[in-house]
Image (cartoon, rainbow, N blue to C red; front, side, top):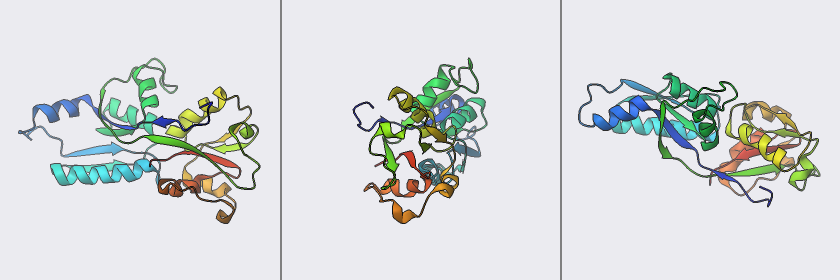
Length: 219
């Protein structure tokens, strides 16, 4: 991050060990298949919701099993839901997944959440920092003392950006944790902010705080 280049992460789909084992062993015998499966996504309007809705539709169509998506607090929450059996599937990011696997989660220190299995990677996520044109913010160091929207608590950006800012020597950044819809309340007129070229970022820009935001976008 000190070079100013994007950092990329790879979200993946996690499943309970029981579900993975039964699917492999009973490929031709559906007697023990669940009648429905629940997939944990993240906040409404985010990338995880879009990916999750498509995934549950695909599962329902191809496997003839009712699959439902549920809005959640993001990767930390999803890993916990799968580990405890409250959901069969969950979308997670590698960092939070590793923390919880090793028992280093803040919410449950020492509890190693290993009743999960990774199914497949979804996409790489380049991180962007977006500011208003008239904010006076031209580099990462200028975020010191500013308000920075980092998405909902427990989400990917909220997990990584406090660590990024600390490593880059950004001091006294006032972090705001909320979903896109709530952070949009702090946004000045949209005409004051140019859109980046990546189409996947456009919907995320509604989460800009009154000074700056951070977001992870695919594409």
